[in-house]
Image (cartoon, rainbow, N blue to C red):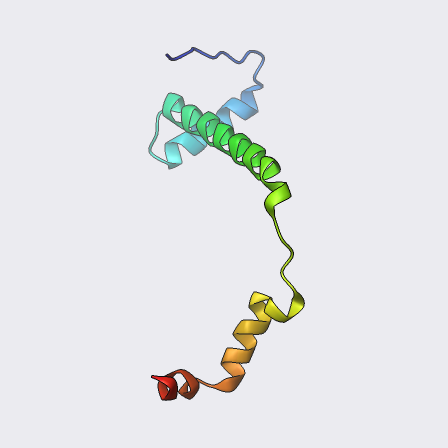
Length: 85
């Protein structure tokens, strides 16, 4: 089921900016605004899911940080992986 939305009292400069952006993207104002609303809805759902799963997260110890692992691999050189194969 779809619903019609209406926004009142949009200032002219805001409307003009939205029309310009839609034009730059090759979209109608309707398509541009629908994409904008859908994107916002996805972000809201993602934020809600992030909050619901917050209790399942673990802390990565410093010795396992991605930065440290990458740095150690880079410092050891590429020959380490080739010799092991």
